Image (tube, rainbow, N blue to C red; front, side, top):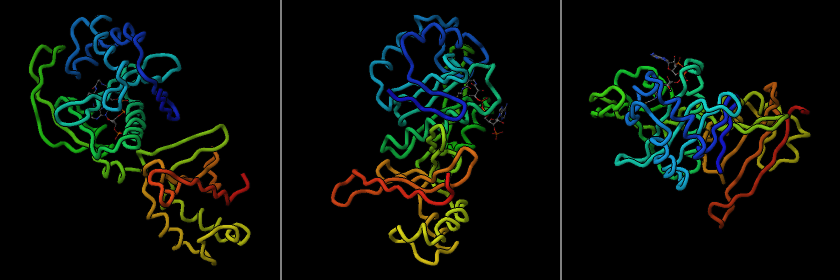
Length: 280
Ligand SMILES: CC(C)(COP(=O)(O)OP(=O)(O)OC[C@H]1O[C@@H](n2cnc3c(N)ncnc32)[C@H](O)[C@@H]1OP(=O)(O)O)[C@@H](O)C(=O)NCCC(=O)NCCS
């Protein structure tokens, strides 16, 4: 079972038991008018057929996550589904949660998960032309609008023009600072290293007592050394190559950890732990 956590949200796999709450949320016209296939009224049994397929498959191209903004309460949904254009991502949030950045947060986390877990290089979506919130949301994440199509919107009872969109692995990489993988414990959090970390890394690695125990660290260590190395670190790597910078929850830099692919053993890794810097 996959659970995705962000600072404010939990994304958990959808369950058959969610049918009644999903149907209730989808009876809100303001939500359903932006979605394609929601009947009016929407009853739990209308949700169940789709839910049954998703719950029993749960592959990366057929999975749905309930978004919990408040613990144990259904706040919205993100789903991945196979289409002729590729794997499609869809989403909605209950109206009471709109306008607080929750879907930006949820989509970033879900897309990070998707691109880390899957080898595919892009994901697709479509948005009704008049859904400006969703178009802004996707543009912020690096989606590109690539065409238009027509969909019958059951809720509106009419054909509506939609914009086809695509998000590539490269685009989310470029947007890596925003679409960031973040792992947290009670005391620290880990995220991919960025060029902005150069000063903190230099301060740590300039200290002889730190650098003396580490292979491949030039001495003296300069800001340029740090910037050169950090610029080469992708935001999103395959799991067996991913590197992390370590911080306290007060954003004090502590060190680095991560995985280096093991020579001769593709896709298996050696973990490197290089805790240095502040005494956290
Ligand atoms: C679309 C939806 C998911 C957005 O969720 P949200 O949590 O309110 O979105 P966020 O708060 O993360 O905001 C996303 C961006 O849209 C912008 N935005 C919000 N309303 C907007 C509007 N009416 N016009 C233009 N931009 C708007 C926000 O300012 C934000 O951009 P910014 O970060 O650059 O300021 C939510 O409104 C919803 O569930 N709508 C109904 C269902 C739906 O439309 N699903 C998507 C189908 S494609």
